[in-house]
Length: 187
Image (cartoon, rainbow, N blue to C red; front, side, top):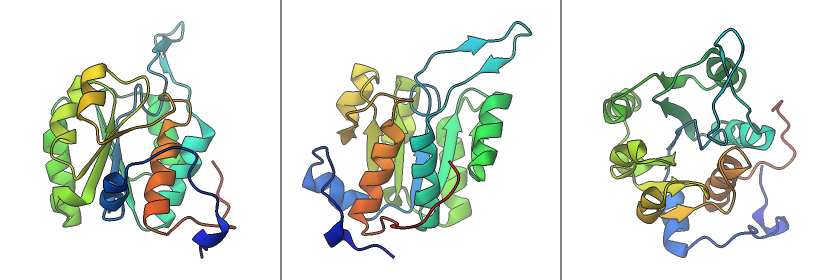
């Protein structure tokens, strides 16, 4: 449903080797705090954790799923706000409150029948590195920790919570020739 000849080029530079790897990705995984959000932690007077999400990021995740890329989240934190957002986006693969992200990653790969080279992970802090280092493609965000950015294949020009996830989604979709024109889903 996409005609890449009518689309503009991506507005950011992505190395050719990253685009080549991106074309092979079947599973896109994301951390939450600092990636899907700006990393700030807000608590209500009742102690409930509040989070702010970017609508562009949400739409990008939905487009990835519609294009046949499985989307998942692996996060050390768990909150009702996060669970609600992921449910609203239709993300079935949710590993929340997970201290061992590698075990969650391995479980998901086995469940989906994929190898690590077909997976991408977007992270921002050192807790994400063990999973990132196993993936075929490693992304970080502009506001990510300097060590994580060092090991990433590509760092988004946007900060977490400010369109970084959409940049990853757009890059994956462009590389696979699957950018959906005319499809509309609620963000």
